[in-house]
Length: 413
Image (tube, rainbow, N blue to C red; front, side, top):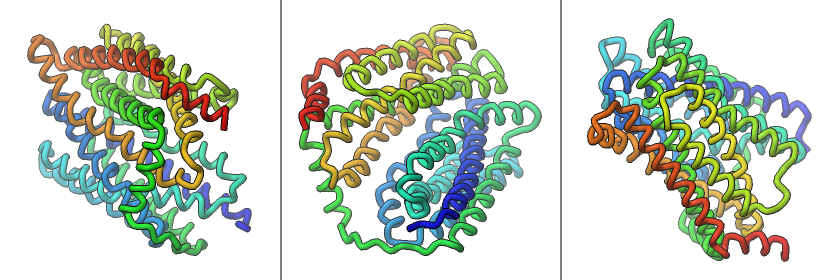
């Protein structure tokens, strides 16, 4: 049985990750603003976001296997410490002149490669530290730390950029990496590593997971929907910044991003208190439909108050969609295949981000050129079209009998 003191070790580890998440959010916000100001291109912003995200997605599966076979805390220390190298490279480039776009891309790519070691090791370490009855409380805290980059960082970054520049944000983020590594080292000193007894190969794991998610057509449809959701989330994340910066300043952008992200926090709390007890397929379709309408309203006018209201609404609806989708999938996959299935689902659902980061920025630039308007209005046009498509997907989704049958299957089981 785990000792009570392990929860204090978790809090130390969590505190380090919270600080690191805030630092990462500062850099993400600052680099987006820097690239847009230097290039005036939404496509360039999206390219940086893509290179920051792609290694983490592609390496998530092997990183999870590595986390089961080697010292997880050591992997976290290596991941945190070495990921600072990419940011140091960008900072040096800026100190010796302006950092070119390709230099920023190289830096964020290097940082992301090493950061990919962190997430699976961190999640597994939480399991190592805590008793089962502590998982739920810890899961909520882990979610809060993960969302800090969206809730806290934009406001801080907007304020700091108003009085300084991007180099200060990079220095702060670099320092947070080493603070997190120190916290992890302290936890590691009092916790033994647990070698795995699982000898399943990558191919065997993939086949098991694929079999679990393709056994029912409704489950496969929902996985496609989850990828569509991440695509539209990526669209609004990438294009909201050039859209807002086209008519206002950095500080306002930071406050607006935080207000919008609070929608997700509020609905998550409501769901945590009341829960969703029935009609999951209907809730999923309705929440996605309202999210689509919110995207349309978000981009209609250059009015920061409307943007904040509709942005809040968009993010408010996402936890309802995620919770319903999670329930329908989870209750229709065999218990002994859940781990392998969710590893594959996590990978497939994030393909939507890759599509968004790789396409929508350049599409916004193209639309702006064709319409002969600013990049901000080009981005707004793409967001509106995306909102219409999301609403159509939501309506079509509820027409699939295979999806509605998932809820009936769970009841009958």
